[in-house]
Length: 253
Image (cartoon, rainbow, N blue to C red; front, side):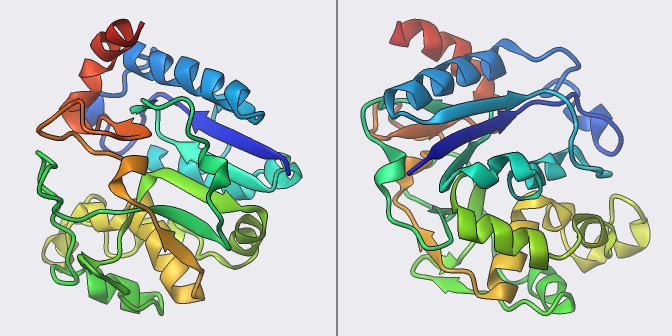
């Protein structure tokens, strides 16, 4: 069994650059560097290969779709399981092996309003999301805590799933440009702009193609919580919380 961890950081350009320039500057920030260093060590501990890329591979209007490299790049065809992590994720438990999780296609944490999470999570079938999915022939899939919306910041993929995605996924540019208020204000009332990005794109495809999606516990993708010491394997410092990663790195050492 060969496994791999994949991360990337590319400078933000094009749509959204002015909004996100403080989070994603041209030079890779320290918080992203710390994440890559820790995941490189995590990979060594669990006999997995590690790849980090800082150049573009995916031809896309939006940086967020660089994530599609995980199924488009034939380099990864040599691996049975692939773990993708955003560079604002930190492994907090280096000993627990994510590759021990049994999967058919994909595994990840479905976002919901967990009582310990201190930031809002507002995914719902309303607000245009269900219509966007329907436009691409995909249903909304329900979870025990609401609709299923796997967070794309921590995902475990099988080789079979990646090959199926390469052959059958909707073109990411077609998805991004469809009724996108970021591109044309005429669509402002047809759904939130976040519905056009990578996470709904992946979930839309999984739903459409009936991928076997395993929902993981929040310990595998712990969003910022009231208690920083709350048990987890991977901590995901989304938004402004990513700037705390250098401090966390120093404390962990």
